[in-house]
Each structure stands twice: as structure tokens, then as C-alpha cells.
Length: 346
Image 1 (cartoon, rainbow, N blue to C red):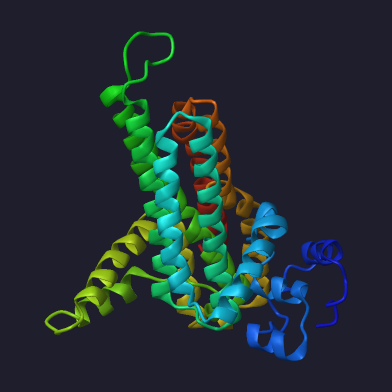
Image 2 (image 1 turned 180 degrees about the vertical axis):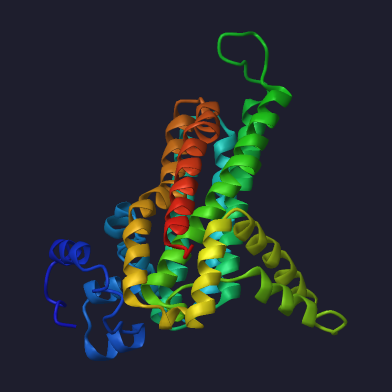
């Protein structure tokens, strides 16, 4: 890599001008970094999925700390999946702390959720740098995040239960439960899953099939069906059966992308044979949407939870989730579908 000795600011500036710089450079592994003296900055860049899809807060804060932990865990022989499991306990602990109205408990909740997020960054970075990526690891990672937020939403329900609604003498009670259900199940969940799908699609066009984790309902359904009747594969079948439904939900909400992708596969056979001109046109339209996918993921939600819990008004977070986040979700979805429609052969 000819840019190893430049500072990160210079690297990021050049990445904006040449979005393929990181993706087409040779990425060192963690073992190679230790053997050949690759710098921390080089390993950090290699641990990114791509500069297009990384959020600035992650680039400058979460990823560097995550890499420091990854180096430590690697020396101790800890696997990425073990780190993911640790994050589950930390995230649930955070949820418990957010149940209390006491500031000290809330600060502890913030610390625990930040540690869980560092683990979430670390497991992926460690997996990429040690070539241990797997679909099961990725899904375990997604499951961990779901458990964190389930614990947090449940804590908010119980926290609000006996509190009065603003401007009234009525307690939240079941209204709080209903608000959490709409915010969590009908808003947060579809927003996060589609944001993840759009990031994987972007990586698919940017780095090819091997550089993305873009799975399909058809493939997962075939795997799930092939496991029927076999002994000793209960957990494998449960995993693929659940994951196929997740993929189907993503595909159902993106009809124009499915049509666009099908047309490309019919003409070229696989993404690596698609003309660079088509890829560049797609990426130029998809790249401005990546900040939306990041906003609808972890960081903004976590910050809003921290602030509203410290101010003892977590219902404000729920209202933001239902209103502002859904508006951004609808806008992002429309923009992406319009992009695919414009590129699909008539």
C-alpha cells in the first residue's frame, strides 16, 4: 500500500475522491500485521468494511478502540463469536440500568452499552483481520443487537409504567407498552434491517460478491429445506429457517432492486462481470444514502437514549423513533427504489 505512512485525514480525503482506494488495496491480516510490523493505522483501515459505509463516529472513535480490544483478544485467543456473546450480557446489563431513574444507574447503563458497542465493533474487526468471517457470526452479531434493544425497550416500559404522562395525571401504564411496541417492532426493527440490506447492497456493487454479506431468501430456503429430516442439525435448521424469513422481509420491501438485480444477473451472470460503468452509476446514487443507513442504525439511537434517560424522559426517544426516524426511513427507501428503477432496462 503506497499510502501507509499518510495520516488518516489525508487518507479519508483521498478516499472521497477515489471510493475504490480502500476496497481494491491489499488488506493485511492481523497475523501479517504482527509479523511484518504493519502500523495500527494500517490495520485500522483494513478492518473497515469500506469508507463509503463507515460512520464518522465509528471511524474516529469506535473502530480505533475496537481494534485495540481486537489486538488484546487476539493475543488471548478469544474468538469473535465469544466477544459477541459477551456483548449480549453487557447490553442486557445496560437495559437493566436504564430501568432506574437514578442518574448514577443511568450513567452505568451508558458505560455498559458503550462497552457492548465496542465489543460489537471488535468482533467484526477481529473476524475480518483474522479471516474468520461467517454468516452465522454475522447473524449472531445481529441477534446480539436485537437482545440489547429488547432489554432497553423492556426497561423503558417498566420505567414509564407508573410515571405520569406529560401534562396529565394519568400514568403511562399500557400506553407506554403500546408506544414501545410501535417504536420497537413497527419502527426500529424494519428501519435497521433495511439499512443493513442497503449497506450490503452497496458493498456488493463496490467490492463484489466476496466483499459483501448479501444473502438471499432463495439460498437460505434451499439450505433450510435440505436440513429437514436430518438428525443433529436442530440449531442449524432453526438458524436458517429464521434467517430466510429475515431475507424475505428485506426482499419484499425492495421490489425495484430485485428487478434491477435480476436483469443484471440475466445479462452478466454474476456481479463481478457487470460493467464498471453500471456499478459506478449505481454507487454514485447509493453513496449519498449511506449516511441515512448509518443514522438509522446504532449511534444516533444510543445517543438519544442516553440523553432522554438522563433527563428522565425516555418517551421522547420513542416519539423520535416513531416520527423522525420513520420519515428518514421512508425517504431512504424511496430514493433507493427510484435509483434502481432508473437503472433497470426498460
